[in-house]
Length: 189
Image (cartoon, rainbow, N blue to C red; front, side, top):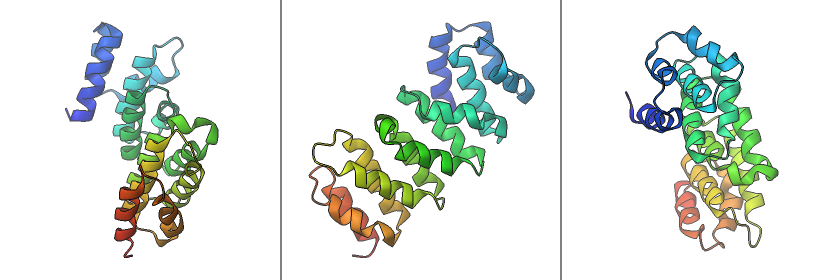
């Protein structure tokens, strides 16, 4: 059991009260049984999360939509699990979905994990989405500086010269300046 799965298992064990349904979902290798949880009525969120995570890690595309919903959840731990599984899923829709979540101005408070996922995916959508998100977050008194920092760090790792102007602007923001300098250094400034 890898660390991410262990973390999910520990957290959902508490949510489920260690029920028999929990033990079954954690231990089964039956992908059909996991997929059934995603479409069954009145399933608790912890059960859907386990099923989606396990299916995503098994590269089963039936997990895509539930994982995208979890990536946009208000609970950061659910976002982390969803991001991990989406990165392993290999579905070609994932970069577009992550870009849509990262650039949605109404959901900026929940954009941290979509931004990190875009960086990990290194997809064609990654750099434009991170630039768009960062540009919006450079406004004075923007409260979502952690998302902005993730954009700066991601753009540095992606190493695309299209990010140079927005990274140069980010240098003027105290919380972003060091990361922006590092990102620009990676671009060969």
